[in-house]
Length: 269
Image (cartoon, rainbow, N blue to C red; front, side, top):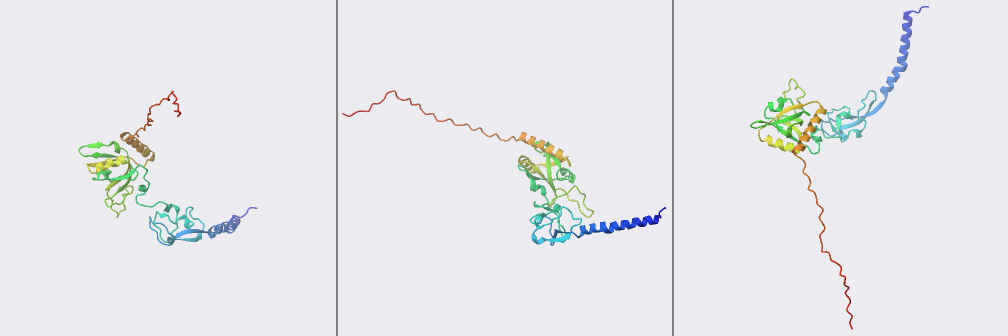
């Protein structure tokens, strides 16, 4: 006996409805009705500010679909720095807080031992690579007074930041918005050794420096180039050798030979 197609569809509909009613809905209900404690902003926090107890509150919310990196207790956020602006009601994610102070020059907080950060002035548009430099670029610095000079100490130098004439960092990696005026590069801050810093300081007050882009977006190549520059600096400025300390000879004293004659004591009569 052939079953009517409508009858089959009816049976399937009933089975599907039963699955939804007795399996899917209770499962979703359990997930959405579960409560979890999270940290929420109750007073606005600006980027760079330390999060204090008055800024936050712990509340219960549905645990369904909460991000894995959401802050769930006060201990997760108190005393940390906000890396983004928080408004009232915002949740706090671990990616938006930091244990280190937040500034516009994050790289200045992690300068390696033995290195310094120093800025050089961009005197013309061409000398600063036509406002195309970006943080992490590897550049070569030339000096021009009467003729252009290739400077061994400045073959491969890492750019830390590019700054406008009002001290604001310039991000040349992004095009300005339609209503935003492009900032011109005024200074370039680089990572340098003390010897390189002295050379840059001398050039800063004598002639013009020009920069050329050597590498961008290749961390492995950048590390190789900086290692090459360190080797050049080591050859140009070898470490001073410590004077050898000689062990002083002990003082010489005359050798006294023991007398072979015994002195007899004088006997009084």
